Image 1 (cartoon, rainbow, N blue to C red):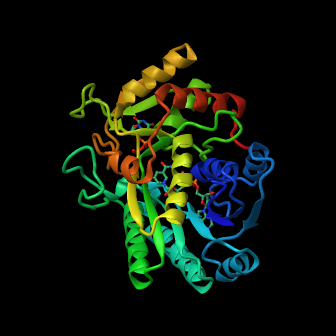
Image 2 (tube, rainbow, N blue to C red):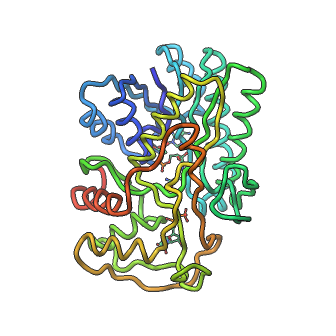
Length: 336
Ligand code: NAD
Ligand code: UDP
């Protein structure tokens, strides 16, 4: 059985469907701090024949975690649970260190007690910090610029230390670039609380009339059209990447840290234009000043994942726009 922490969240829910469809039995642990209980029903609806159990618990609740490990024969862990808002991490660093690092330590302790030695971890491109060159390769210097990014880097180091102490402990750190889009069914997708911080959920909510106008943060960056450039990756490709990473851990006797991106960058204006074309009308936007802490441009060198894992992103910007829009129109207020 696979333990999926944070499995009711945005990326976790899509990955649970992919894992279940690949034949894995799942036990999800989530404290629902950034997700809704109704996600579970949607995941089960998309993988009706699979075994998908759920335990409402916080990773830092050691007694609860112990009972999950005691009750299930867990073969590997896919670890999504964490807080992810960069701005909030600057205001509440203790919360981020406790939840992300503290939660991971509690998880690793339970894994050690129960002899579980395989883990796939959600890392982030934010571990790289200011680009010394682009695209980022995995050996690029690691200088995250926020408490959030530092928790991700420290967890990567923790996993390396753990595998140093136990040669049979193996991990994959997956450094995600910018996940967007939704399941093609429109049944699961991204459901941020309150006003979205990220470009894509903001854009789809403007298009649906829930928000008035997109604010494009900066049009004076040294990029082709002056707006920020990112490597947007379809969440379904990302989900597939986790199935591949888990198989890698089962089959190969080594750990790996790999970028999961498409390998090319798109500007904010390219995204807005493609989305407007797809929905067949203009999306109102205005240029405002740069957002503090934003990097002008970054994208992945995705060749290591292709070479070592045999994974590459298959879906393009039109798929991301179409699927995000289907999710938005079918669920205008997100999950019930
Ligand atoms: P999300 O907030 O939608 O999902 C995280 C889930 O973890 C939520 O359901 C939340 O309730 C749960 N959770 C948080 N802390 C927990 C705890 N202590 N115990 C139990 N459950 C807990 O986020 P997401 O976008 O699906 O991201 C998943 C992971 O990927 C996170 O670790 C995030 O840092 C990482 N990541 C996300 C992005 C992105 O852009 N979405 C990019 C890079 C990395
Ligand atoms: N962005 C924007 N308006 C928004 C949200 C984001 O112009 O309301 C820009 C942002 O400046 C960046 C890109 O969109 O260039 C992606 O931002 P997002 O917050 O989605 O991801 P991240 O900053 O984590 O890469």
